[in-house]
Image (cartoon, rainbow, N blue to C red; front, side, top):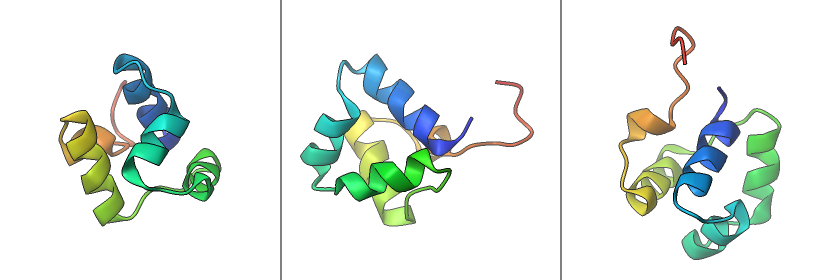
Length: 68
């Protein structure tokens, strides 16, 4: 799973749209475009997202050897 899928799953679990979360965190929609294309957030942005959702950074990271 890439970052965009992890991010949108977290949004859904918390009843938020991706746009709402971006706005709440003061992030541009350009971030979403990069993430949809397979990119990931910077470490500082990932930390802000993790704090927003109350999860660990590990939960935001794609583990290529993971079976999920």
